[in-house]
Length: 228
Image (cartoon, rainbow, N blue to C red; front, side, top):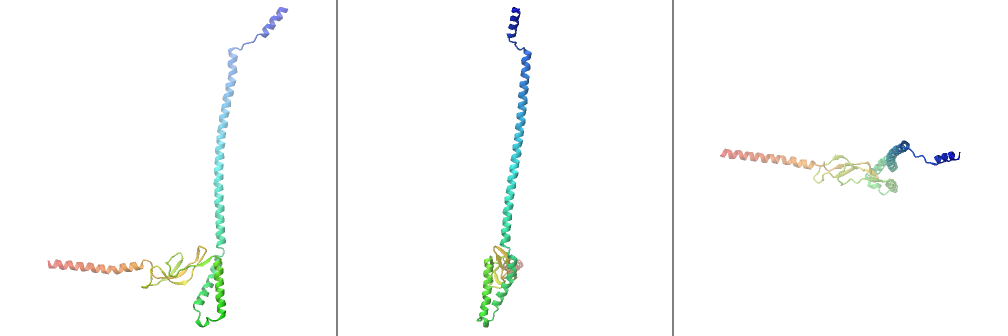
C-alpha cells in the first residue's frame, strides 16, 4: 500500500509537457486579437481624420460667416451715418428758393431804399439763414469764371463773343449748392462757347482757302499745258 501511494504521488508531481497541437492552438487566439486590435485602430484613425476634416470645414464656414456679418454691420453703420448726414436734404431744398428770393430782391433794390433800417433787418435775416445752412454743411458752388463742369453746372445756353473763352462760365442764372460733398442743386449757368465749336469754325474757315488753292493750282497747270 505504501509503495502504491508513493508511485501515485510521483506521478502527480511529474509535470505534464504540452504537445505540439496544444501550443499551436494557444497562438491562434493571440494573433486574431492582434488583427482585431489593428483593425479597430485603423477605424478609429479614419474616424479621427474624418472628424478633423469636419471641424476644419465648420471653422472655415464660421470664419466666413463672421466676416460677412462684420461687413454687413459696417455697411449698415455707413448707411446709417449717410442717412443722418443727409437727413435734412429735403428740408434744405425747400429753403433754397427763399434764399433765391432774397438774392433777387437785394440785386434789384432801388437805390433810394438803401438807407432804411428795416432793410438792414431783412439783410440780417438773410445772413442768419445762410449761417444756419452753413452749419448744416451747405456751401454754395462757385461757378462764375470757372471751367464748365457738368457735375456742378447746368448749362442753360451758350453765348458767342470774341472776348469769351471756350468752356468758361460767363454768367450765373441760379446759384447751386452742395450738402457736404454731394451736389443737391447744380448751378444754372451760361457758357462762353460749346467746347470744340471754335475749332470747328476754324476748320470750316480753312476749307474754302484750301479749295481756292486747289483751283489755282489746277488753272496754273491748264495754262502751262495750253502754252506747251
